[in-house]
Length: 308
Image 1 (cartoon, rainbow, N blue to C red):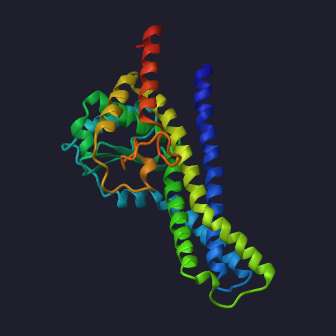
Image 2: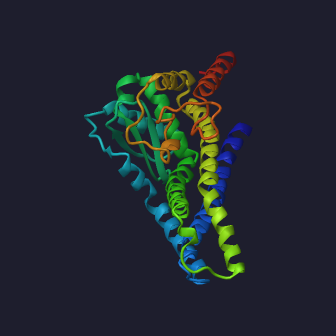
Image 3: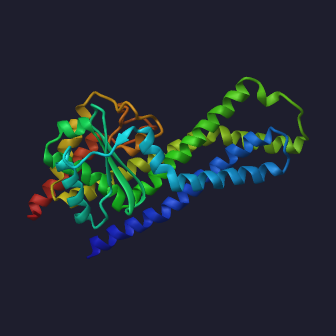
């Protein structure tokens, strides 16, 4: 009972942390927008315009981020006769997890990978590559699907899905802002009073740091939540070796996911860009070897305890 309570408590903490982290990313977005608008000499109204943009983007991200990610990932919805075993696995594990069956999509890509998106268990989707479907046996595929369903059950997808859109926008705007300063836009036009310039410089510093801070924050959270999703998946399938074996095959697959990029990479079960580096601060996932090790240690403990 104690373990069950701790697990559900972790889910509630995920929900609370989601809104806090999205608030922090939104604040970064506000400062980036304000820094850009500030140099149009709009005075104090720049604050209100930046706030309006931030709220509009937040609302759009909450409502449509999953659709946007699926669209840029070039997914399609398979017919049941095309991949009946995939649909059966998703339906069966959804029942085991106690959540509605998410929508199922396939990415026509030779790389082995998968991801989940959504706002909550009632509004979620799982996408897997054709390469994954071709290279995994049923137990391995169950492990991968269970991992993605765990992200949905644990409410990881809400943060990851919305954060991808918000952080992506922060990075794009921040990069555009830096380019404008490099080309001299910062010094062009009429300058304001020293006090106003000081406020503009502060906003500029925040805007320049915002993409870096937002990216580090999102990547760090992605790494920590992967471990929890692995453990939850093992409990769903009662077979940690299935996911461990799948991760081994994914790690050995040299093909990057063609439609993945630095912004969407944290959504995938393993780095889709194939830039594994355990010492890299910007790695989107924890070391895959460590994940495999933990899963197999879990399996060994279960054997000693007689868990079936």
